[in-house]
Length: 125
Length: 107
Image 1 (tube, chains in turn blue, green):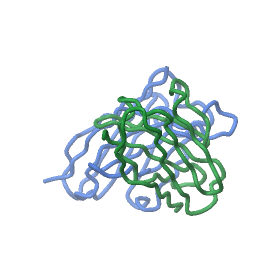
Image 2 (spheres, helix red, strand yellow; image 1 turned 120 degrees about the horizontal axis):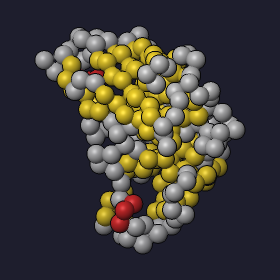
Image 3 (cartoon, one colour; image 1 turned 90 degrees about the vertical axis):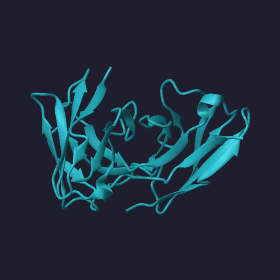
């Protein structure tokens, strides 16, 4: 059974870089057709998709964050990571990693069927 | 970006009530529409994928339907564990986008 677990600092100073890792267990991050996403949720607000990366390391970003976001894959550690630069208080949120399978032939196609538990990141000096 | 508009933003209902939540996409997304349930302090959980397919382990009282760019989540008989916030999400295009959520509260 595939599980995802986010990790990283819970407090980041304004203007610095937020860095999070999502560790995948119970399955390979290199499996074809899977997309590995980051999604965030400010307190009391809706979910915002940050971007995803596929098994080949090709990333797609939300245009609203594209200039500040980098996703990467480490197949040797079976994990993927998020870097968000120049953070401000508006980046304070719970950050989730999630998986979806990007093919219509999947058992559960194009839906976030597995999520991490989430990690709270606060931007404050 | 494709905008997803949910209604209502919140509702109050009794245990046993039939509850309907709607989600409208700003453009054609075919059936690339998913529904999630989120309880406080927890990650969202997938309920329905591809507009009307029940995810594994989800009770059959949850049902999804589609008509053009309008999508509906119906809970046939609300149970105590169903009080939560529900989100729709489109996977037709990137960026993936979510509705603003519908909070279902106890009456």
